[in-house]
Length: 144
Length: 414
Image (cartoon, rainbow over all chains, first blue to last red; front, side, top):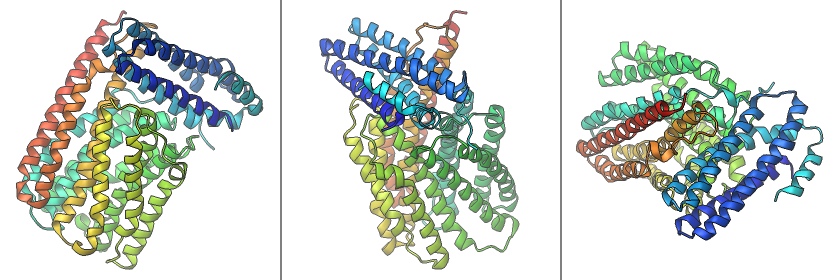
């Protein structure tokens, strides 16, 4: 296992939670949707924190780059956080159409972001971060 | 040396949108050309709609999407957006128009000569893009597939240019050998691009399981080897049954994709029926290919295979992709223009789900009418009419999206 496989697995885990949330909303299971939304948002927040506080600084230190790809990833995290806030708001109002529309937007944003990370950024972390194995051990303690 | 990814230099909104709009407009001459198909093969009356569809409609969408995708999937920066937006775009439209007008005029040399010059310039521009892709740090299956697909597009263009050199400039090259190779390379480019895109789109956007690891690693290579062996066989023995080599990867791809689609965890997703229809038509193509052994020279089979690959499979996928990518690009550009934490309308506000479902119904209706055209080519008018209906739907939906986008831009706090 390396950083790419572990972090890609985290993405798939978040996808599973996302699919379960959509399913609950479709079935009008609002109590279930509340719980699933809370756990989905928590997993996403934890993953963003892992990347922003551990992974990206390690890559920046290894490559010497400060802006560029990691800055774009941080910016997209911010956009996803805002959409998750919208999602919570729509859910609170029991607005099924609003939830569906926000989910659709969030899914596309989330997946094009994951594509960039899984195809380029994570493999780069594996090859450029000198103590990638230690970092992986740290991340495995806090994420599934 | 590999380049660093440049996610912050994605193409501007107007770049892919320009290609997408042009693609929709090419549906008009395509529909007109279907009114005069005869029952011969090879025939200019079949080559004309084929090239209008392949270059005008599909070529424009695929090129626009490719320019957007290489930035996202492979981190290749868009260095000269104005050149791609105006220069390459204009070259593509003019080259397609010259070639098709040359076909319409019964292979008129001046138009074919003009087309050959324009396509040569395009090949040079695309070589630059291939070089950028080659230097990308991305080493995943879809990036490898994109590189191979772009390489095959260039090969298709070069083989097409060789034929134009024969027909337009009188070069003494063997046209009967060049034509099947050009056809093989074109099929290779379409399939490779879709294979590369499907590996990403199906699991990520339709939430299907991933394609099997062996397919992700070797699928594109298997298809490429089948094409190379088929091409070698054609050169060695012109009656070579190349389809028997192409059949296995194509049938495998269709079967694997249909199995994955059954396991999608987004049954409500409107894009899913597009993919079902497209891969059912690819499976039909795989079922029809063996008929080449018995009905090789039959015009109806040539029309059926061409329609299944281009008008059925590829057109269905690209129309579905337009309904996914255009509202997202509008949303993204609006979000980037908005102040932090300002809530912008969701994607559905630009293009509602019902719009995408209407166009899917038009695509579904196209298929039996295409079968009618395959059977009786003089009955191309119902197919042409529904293609015009599809054009009307696309223009109506995307004009509404543009209006919504402009209104939302105006409403942003300054």
